[in-house]
Amino acid sequence: MQYAIQVAIDSLSLGSIYALAALGIGLIFGVMRLINFAHGELITMGAYSLIIPSAAVIPTLFVGAFPWPLLIVSVVVILVIVALAMERIVFRPIRGADPATLLIASFSLSYFLQYTMLLVYGGRPKGIDIGSSLTESIQIGSAEIAKIDIVTILATVVLMLALASFMKWTSIGIQIRAATQDFRMARMLGVKANAVIAGAFAVSGMLAGVVSLLVISRVGALEPRLGVNMALYGFVSTVVGGMGSLTGPVAGGFAVGIASGIIQAILPDHMRPTRDAFVFAIVIVLLLVRPEGIVRLKSSKERV
Image (cartoon, rainbow, N blue to C red; front, side):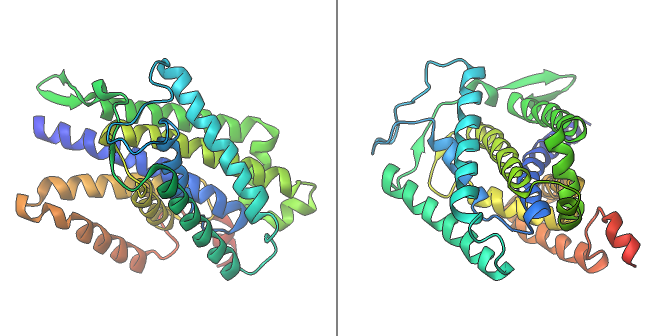
């Protein structure tokens, strides 16, 4: 029972991070039908924004003396600004282009940001002490649970509730939801494309900032490809959950995270490095059985 509780908490924690990463990717896809591969670099930039550029293995923190609330706000604000700049400079001018052009632009932006960070900060991994106390464990019954897992789950729940309220009760949130369902019809009904797309990128940047802080608190090391793996799992989770909806990426993120945690727990020690092979095999089977993903769009049901 103790081991089962630990596996459940670990799986939920991992699923929470994947869900937040997937929601940032799925939100942009829902509005623009754009797969933003640069979302991974947003996550990486959030972590690197904490330090002063240097070649040191142990870098100097920009915000080392800041309290946690101010640190979180600083990273989130930086990534929201970067995400808005991405939309305005790169994607808005080519918004009407074919999907292949948007995809190439997304790839190009991803590599540009990645190598820019490599140029500024260097390629050597850097240790960083942010929230190291969260890696400690606390006793819950007979199980020892890492604080970072509890914080990750609670942060995700609070963020999801706040985002759901934002989407339901604010004007821009309602417009974003309408655009994810049918962007052309939403525009015909008076929804302003520039405001909706910019709002979606701003929310995506905010989510990337939270993921960045959670990941760096967990791993304690910086390197230029830090967010690439998160973006990959976020994209897979979006596809598994159902592209074009807002609930789909969240469901997919938790599904992939829980599957990863359970497989990690049941595999023998010598096979655990191959965990991802089993996870992606399950993803393939799931997509063969249900190609539209876990959450099926109402519009898709109506066309069948």
